[in-house]
Length: 111
Image (cartoon, rainbow, N blue to C red; front, side):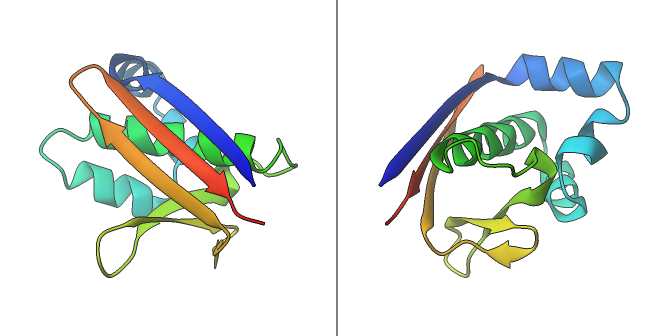
């Protein structure tokens, strides 16, 4: 079992996106962008997905998987799941949370 954890400042993601219009499409899938932009305040949702991508990358042992290949989706019950290159990663579990200033993600890779 491998664990990955990442903590992100929400304001940092917001600043990066505002400074560079290519940031969001370079890091997030079209469905992730649509999900986040549908929220009243999209920035915590972008930040927690960025943290999830980093946490998954760490849980995979820093495998040769680009952040753009990792996508966070919700299952039928609303729980976060991971797609890697469009395929469900059943051996990965995610826990996501965000507050006013920070977003955190935990990823566990099961044996």
